Amino acid sequence: MDLRNFFRYLKMEKGLVPRTAELDEISIDDVDLEFVRSVTLSDVYSYMNYLSRDRAKHANSPMTGYGLEASARARKIAAIRSFYKYLTNKAKLIAENPMQDLDSPRLKKSLPRYLDLDESIQLLESVDEPNQARDYCILTLFLNCGLRISELVSLNLTDVRDDQLRVLGKGNKERMIFLNDACMEAIRAWLEERSRCAAADKNALFLTRRHTRMTTDAVHYMVKQRLKKAGLDASLYSSHKLRHTAATLMLQNGVDVRTLQEVLGHEHLNTTQIYTHVDNENLRAAAKANPLGRLKSAHPAKKED
Image (cartoon, rainbow, N blue to C red; front, side, top):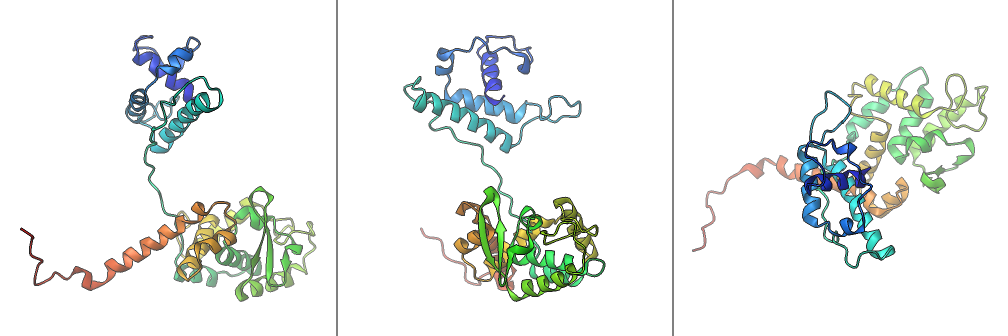
């Protein structure tokens, strides 16, 4: 769809169809290799300008706005770049790639939201009955180990191995996480209570009140309820934000990025490095918080002639 709309737009821009034509209805059956070869970087940037100003965000909605977000435009750029790379390097239909220097729109990087240390303690200390031992254990694992919710609900009893936890991550990749004292104590308390349950799923580590394995929806709901109980804004945080919290607290307290990558089960280091930006933001805020930072010098520097 991304490439089809690009060529539809070019046909309109080059006067091959009326300006009044609906973009989505323009035929591209006549787009041949000669047409494809004639496309320039200027054509692509013109298309990007059109997308940022005039393209409907939701074409079928009467309430739509206009102008696509940078992320949507970046996806279309990627499709165009990949297409021309294929024609040049694989199919050998074009001698030189005209999109070699095509730049993507700059995406605004949003820093992950997380609880600070006091809020994390506040959340844990607010956990009460019912399901106190189970919910406290789940929250403790999220906040200390940085588990994904999918990893947590798939945990089995046999995955708890003394001071280690076997975790099955994305792509069925297995990793071992060392458990600190808080995690081991929380697991012991929950296992003692779980041993008294007539479990419908004998393997599952975490059970619902009906003694079946907890689902991701059940954990999401529990986390939201526990956040509300702790007086925290449940609309801002989730189980995934607790994973961010664990990562940020570890990084702030001396864990290096490569070790954090192993703990979180990230395949690529640059995924983990988002947390270094969080830490840098904290350092910047700390510098600005010092009251001496607002003190003006009584002897301003002289300007060089």
